[in-house]
Length: 462
Ligand SMILES: Cc1cc2nc3c(=O)[nH]c(=O)nc-3n(C[C@H](O)[C@H](O)[C@H](O)COP(=O)(O)OP(=O)(O)OC[C@H]3O[C@@H](n4cnc5c(N)ncnc54)[C@H](O)[C@@H]3O)c2cc1C
Image (cartoon, rainbow, N blue to C red; front, side):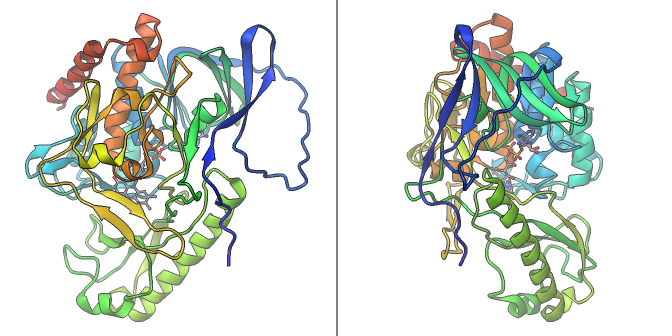
C-alpha cells in the first residue's frame, strides 16, 4: 500500500528572506518536508542577468497561458510568455488531452468566443479537428498540429516567446511582483514586468510570490492523476473506440474515463487510470510517472491480449507528463463555489462562462467519477475577482489555478474554460499595465469593452 503523501489540506505559507526597504525574496514552502533530515544549505548570493523588461509576463503556455499572452499582446502591450517545454499547449499537447470542452452549451450555441474560437477555426482549416464548432459536442484536436497553430498565433500577435524555461522564483516589492526568475540552458535569468499572469496550472508563480493558496479538501484529498496515451493500428468502428466484443473483453481492467476514437480511423486515445499523487511534490510526482508508465504497459498488454480489435495495436504516444486534475489554487478576492455552478450564477464582473459538468474524479479506493451535469443551454459566470490573488496588486491567475472550491474547479478546469479565463486575465493584465494601476482597480466597463474587441477579431480570420 502506498503512502499517498497527502494527509491534510494545505494552505500557503511563506518564509521571507528579509531584504532592506520592503523588498522581499520569497522562499516558497508548502509545509511538506522534502528533506527528511530537515537539513538546509545556504546558497551564495548571485548576480542574475535581466533578459527582458516588459509590460506583461505570462508564466506557462497551456490553454490559459497562450490565450492570455495573445490577448495582452494584441492590446499593444509588450508581452513575454515563458514555458518549461519546447512547445506550447500544456494539457492540449503535453498532456495529450484530445477534446476541448465545452465549446457549446447546446447545438449551435457557442460558449467560447474570441481567441479560443479563432484557434479552433485555424485547426479546422488544417484538417486537425474531429468535430466542428456548432455541434453540442467537444471539439477534438490533433495535438501535433496544435503545437504549430498555437506557436504561430502567439508569434503573429507579437508575443516574445521563451521556451525551455522553468520558473524557479519570484521577487516582490511590498504588494507588487517585480521579477520572475527562470532557469534554462543559458543559466538563471530574470524577467521584469509591470503585470504578471500565472498560467502554470499549479499556481507556481503565486506560490513563489508568496500569494495565498490552498490545495486539496479537509482530508488533503486531491483528484487523481492520469498518464494519457494513444494507440494506432486499432481495428475499430468509425465513431467508436471499441466494438461490443472488445468492451466485454476488457471490462473491469481499468479505472477512469476509458477510450476515445481519434481523428485517424485506426487510432484510439486512452484516459484509463487513476494515480493518487500530489504533482507539486517532486518525489510524489516521480512515483506517479513510474506507476503511470507501468499502468500504460499493463493496459496496452491487456488490450492486445483480450480485445480482438486491438490485437495488432501499437503504442503511438504517451503524454509528455502525467496529467494533474487538481493542485494548488489561489485564494482570490472571490472563490467560485459549487453553488455558483449549479445555481447558474451571474456576476457584475463576469469575464467568461462555464458549462462543463462538475467532474471530480474519485478518492483512493473510489475509482468512480462524479459527474453532475448542467442543463443544455445553461451556463454559469466566472467573475474577474476569481483571477485576483489576495494581497498582490499586479498578479493574476488563469486556468486550473483560479480561486475556486474543489467542486467548482471540477467544472472550470477544462481546456475551453481555461482558454476563456486566459483571455480575461490577459485582457485585464494589459489594461492594468496600460493604466499603471492594480489589476483589481481596472474599471470593469473597460475590461468588458476590451473582451468584446477580442470576440470581434474572429471575423477577420481568413
Ligand atoms: C487525464 C486528463 C484528461 C483530461 N481531459 C480533458 C478533456 O477531455 N477536455 C478538456 O477540456 N480538459 C481535459 N482535462 C483538463 C485540462 O487538460 C486541464 O485542466 C487544462 O489543460 C488546464 O489548463 P491550464 O492552462 O490551466 O494548465 P496546463 O494545461 O497544465 O498548462 C500549464 C502550462 O504551464 C507550464 N508550466 C507549468 N509549470 C511551469 C513552471 N514552473 N515553469 C514554466 N512553465 C510551467 C506547463 O508546461 C504547461 O504548458 C483533462 C485533464 C487530465 C489530467
